[in-house]
Length: 168
Image (cartoon, rainbow, N blue to C red; front, side, top):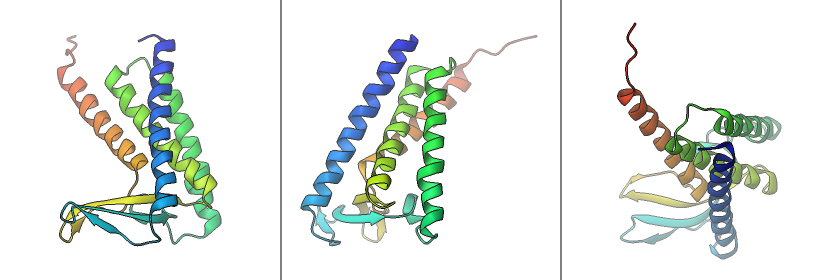
C-alpha cells in the first residue's frame, strides 16, 4: 500500500466511523429519555442515555475535573497523534493492522470530540447482556476501539506465527 493509499484508507475509516458514532450520539441525546434504559429483544439489548466522565467502565470518573481533563483530553490527544503517526509511517503494518489502528483512531477521536463538546464526558447509550451478566454502557466509538484492538491482536499474532524464520 502506497503512502497516499494508506492515508486515504485511514481517513475513510476514521471519517465513516466518527460520523456514525457522532450521529448515534446525536440521536441518543435528542431522542432517548433521560437516564431510563429501555429493554429490547428479551432484555438482551438495553438502550438509554448516559454521560460518562471516566474512561472504560467509568474508570477515573471520580478524579478531580482538572485531572480528568488532562488525562482524558490532553493525554488522549497525544496518544491519538502517536497512533496516527505510527499508522501512517510504519512500513511493517499490513492492511488488516492498518484497519485495526484506524478503527482505534476513529473511536478515540470521536470520544475525544465528545469530551471537548460535552464538559469532559462521553455519551454512552448501549448495554448488552443476559440476565445479570451485562456489559457496561457503551457507544459505537467503543465498539470501533474494541474491534480495532481485536484486529490488531489477531493479525499481529497471525503475522508472527506465519512469518518465515531466519536462519543464521
